[in-house]
Amino acid sequence: MTDSPESAQTQAMLASVPLFSGLTKAQLRYVVQSAQERTFAPGEAIVRQGDKGIGFYLILAGKAQVERHGKPVASLGPGQFFGEMALVDDQPRTADVKASAPVRCLVLSSWEFWSAVGKEPEVLRTLFKETVRRMGADRSGLTE
Ligand code: CMP
Image 1 (cartoon, rainbow, N blue to C red):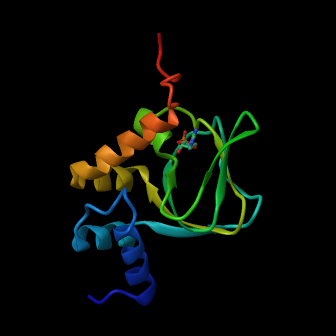
Image 2 (spheres, rainbow, N blue to C red; image 1 turned 135 degrees about the horizontal axis):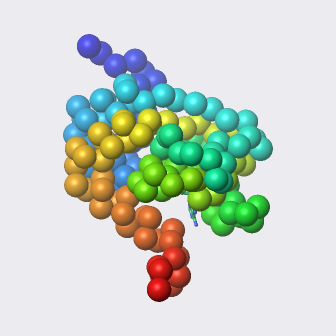
């Protein structure tokens, strides 16, 4: 089966982002074909702090702002991801993520996310590295 131009473009984009660059072409095609693309308008909430997490988001285009307790903590752009934490530990969302400009995301369900993670140890490593970074460069997120 040949890919649509949009699907081929998304696969090329994913091949260039650190999270998925270790996947083979067939694996990238599988991820793109099983995931959904969604767009969000500026100001729109994509995930909300405290909600149950059901999806993982990879930004294809645009910008999103991460806020904890209403305070901005990070700005994310193309190739960056969010929504992994609630899927990893099955706890509520740790932050609000809002579109700060029109944003287009690839959304993976929990099942699709774990399937992609399980395909290649490098995906897990990149995810883990970023999670540790997000917990605080000074490791302040560690329990005593
Ligand atoms: P999750 O808790 O599922 O939903 C909110 C998301 O915001 C979280 O996963 C991370 O992906 C993201 N997030 C939370 N804190 C930070 C941070 N300090 N820097 C970047 N992203 C963050």
